Image 1 (cartoon, rainbow, N blue to C red):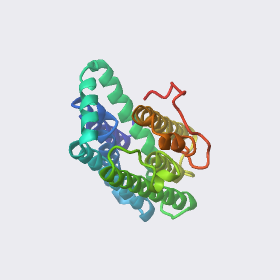
Image 2 (cartoon, one colour; image 1 turned 90 degrees about the horizontal axis):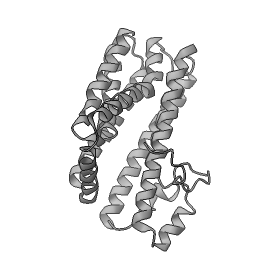
Image 3 (tube, rainbow, N blue to C red; image 1 turned 135 degrees about the vertical axis):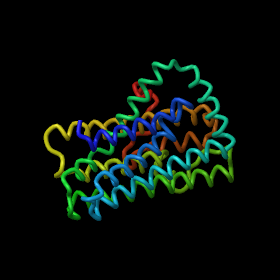
Image 4 (cartoon, rainbow, N blue to C red; image 1 turned 120 degrees about the horizontal axis):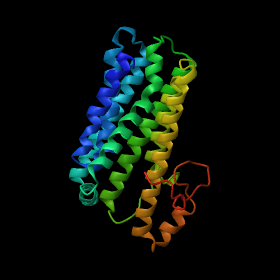
Amino acid sequence: MNTSYLILAVVSFLITSIGFRYYIHFFSVGYGFAIAGLALAMGIVFLPVLTLPTILMCVLLLGYGLRLGGYLLYRENKTPAYNQRVSGDIKDGNKVPFGVKFAIWISCAVLYLLMTCPIYFRLKLGASEFDLPAIVGLVLMVVGIGMEALADKQKSDAKKKNPGRFVDTGLYRFVRCPNYLGELLLWIGVFVSGFGYMTGWQWIPAILGLILIFYVMLSGARRLELRQNASYSNDPEYQQYVTTVPIILPFIPLYSVIKYKFLVA
């Protein structure tokens, strides 16, 4: 394995290992901080060949990861309803056998490496220009990060005003999971940024990473839908909302993913 990628692998595995304390952190806090750590590590490893486009990509991923990890930690500790749910997840996670946790740790750490590899391949070739893949990729990354941050804030504000009601204001008027949509746009941007710098086998990990993050986001949307159905199934406004607003992709009439039981991540 290339030395530079070995360094990134060590970073991903080390940070993601915080999930051994709290099982859910493999996918949440560990995810955010692992992405931040990988962005910082890429910037340090490739410092001599950094250019403005790649600096911006690394800074965006660093900021994204730190914001996400910090936001999730804050929400776990400061939001009563979420804290209660997380406490239940932690108790359930404590029952998971070590072997299963170990397998999930490996899977998550590898996934985060796959997701960020297009930027790695771009850095590896020392790309220096604001070419079309860089411009499109950066725009998608900025839009995605901004959308996810705004959706989290809008949901937090709405829950403070009315904790017992589902959120259907702001970005939630257009899709029911705008934070997941923002995350998908971010990773599509990362993928696009590697165009022209990935050849042969290098496309395989990049495409696999993109497919897997789509799977993870759809799985998250399914978990949210099941939880909301359990909480608001008797609310006529909620029934109207879920049958008219797409769950994750705007303008695409996909209103439910419950029946897709393979989405179990």
